[in-house]
Image 1 (tube, rainbow, N blue to C red):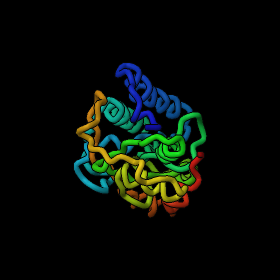
Image 2: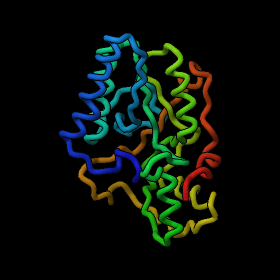
Image 3: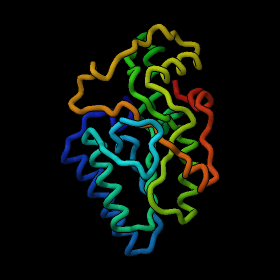
Image 4: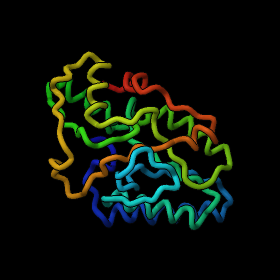
Length: 220
């Protein structure tokens, strides 16, 4: 819908940007003794378990997830002192031309359209403000390795859409429930990549914002 994971990406371009470039950045940081915090995605997982932790086995199902996983490995192999933050689906107020997951739903409903949202795809959505708080602490600290940055609730894309409609007084009945099996895209989609963010809460003293407060910040 609103992030690179939902856009058609050429495999060679994804390989260059998501896999090789992070390794090169890590090399430059190593030479200059710079702190590096790299961003990855929840889609490095196969989606066959809820609330996955940093040490759980990965198994990305699509080009985006596979190349992001390769980027993680390149960064940590080159610069073990780096931190790699796996970011969940972004909601709330966006800060660029693309709409976030909640903004795209709200804008569609306000325009009279009927978005089709999966009832069987689960995430732990996170807002930019909560992300910024966690990343600032990572940059200032010295924590290394993988870290999950997910929001406070696990819910389906359909459930998230209903929460958006309720937050803005928009018609819930315009949201059409759909199944992943109906998805016509070229890549498989992971059913459940909800993140266990216990380490971030413990090590960073961090807590993501409540979901409904973040939703209400969405641009309409």
